[in-house]
Image 1 (spheres, rainbow, N blue to C red):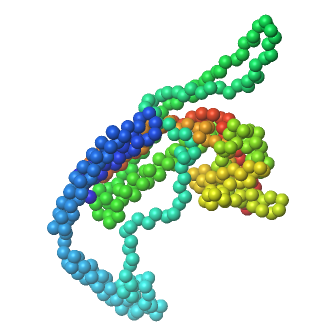
Image 2: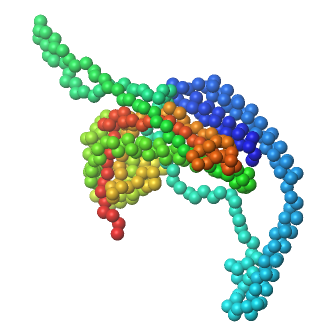
Image 3: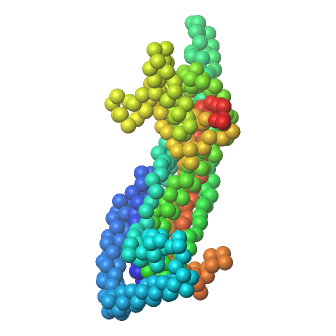
Length: 384
């Protein structure tokens, strides 16, 4: 891939990101603008395809003869074998010298190496807490949302004929403010690596950057949940109390239990009086787990320990409705730009023949309703 192709890809990625932003539900939704941007992407893709054909043609014309390369490699390998054979002869062929695959001169050259350049991605569990909270696209750096305060209403008073009617309290309101912050990072890669690798490393890097965005959102959401005082649930009865009393009828019906792998192991050991597991698949959605907590079956969502860690032997349990509890203000969805002339820190892309990818996103997370969730934990004895 040459410089021009990288620049076209960067433009395509940027326009697609902008199109996604215009298609997001909210104040900034604009289908016409999104369509226009996608049409521009199609034109850029045609330009990229044409440039790629020219680039491949030039590579084929300038590539050295394959047979010549194979001959050079074969000759070198043969010389290495002869050199090793001569060395062994001078030493009188050591008695413990045997033919083996591990040593090239002892037969190893007859066993071809399998060198796989395709990037193999190890399996991992990746989950985003953004699916759990309310995401609000915004167009300003600062702002607020207005909420009606909760208050205990006492109803009307009995009034006799001709008596004065008493004054009652009116609704009261409060505002939750947000202030957008910027989160960013850059990722350098040599142009030789990009051009000479058989694998599409640019695609791999873009996926890596996307995962960095997911981890950032998870971290911000968990930090905001942690601002609410922890509750020691102690056991299953504590979970029931959180649902029945703390959350109550306002949130119980829409509540879920969120925990990590360690918490799942704990829930998976709970049994009723007849020895039946309290954690069961949802009959209508087998992939969804639910916990039988008294008369209520509560959905259970499990996140990897890497994203939702156990700290100080406290199994984390976020119980409640995070859609009501947490607001995620998104000022600018993840944007990625690439440059081979930028200067970042101690790196000079032009001077060092690098390409540098810069990723930026702007966001804020706030508690919308601290009564909508419980920041709980259950202490366990550490394994020996």
